Length: 293
Image (cartoon, rainbow, N blue to C red; front, top):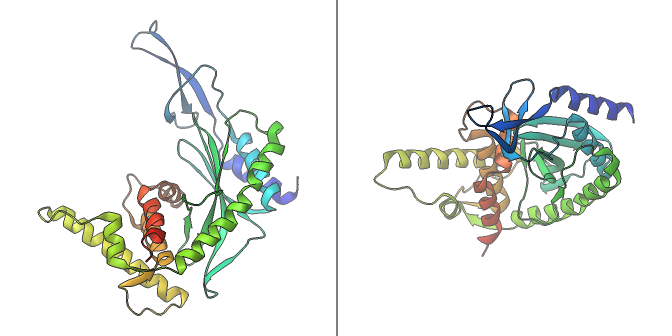
């Protein structure tokens, strides 16, 4: 293990410095046993997962997450950095040292790959190749592109399966090529902004002041983001009534990641997680291609 890899592994273990433990579920009386178990964080006592598990289920730990990161490194090259988060399981965003940069518009609007690992409790692990756009700090994934996600069977003690894990992650390199093809396709599509947003969010009920206000504020926030990003990357501001499919997807994804009100006070990385599973963002991806004429 290189010094850099050891530092990355230490960062993962330091962030996930707690265990997730399995406990039996019981009824109101101690004698009322069930065949089900639930998992809880050792540091906060918070319940983890989306439901119960069986007696045979063995929770994974931080060492298993480190094994996933090492497998990704073997497939993509040395890891420059990781960002970690936890939401019913472990999330890790991996930045490869040697990044494949895609210039979508000129030299100032580019995206680079990020590998997003999700190791939930009670469900299948998956790894997704996503894109980071530094002009707006968006970390997005395209769900409609094949080969951008691989599923990894959950098991405790992943290290003995390292060869298989490396092979799984290697498949994502094909996904990156497919993803860049889709982004270039989006950039070639010119769309009517109003029609796009109507197709995405619909029209509010005229007799509902709250719905009208929400619709107005959301539309203005997305248009402001679209205009700001045009200026930042050196595009001509021109007419905001039309935009490329790529611009509109990034504006909607950025709104979902940074501007949309969320319950509680999610961290920046938790906002990435929430946006990555947002159905509206996935619909925006579909529309960015499907509305082409």
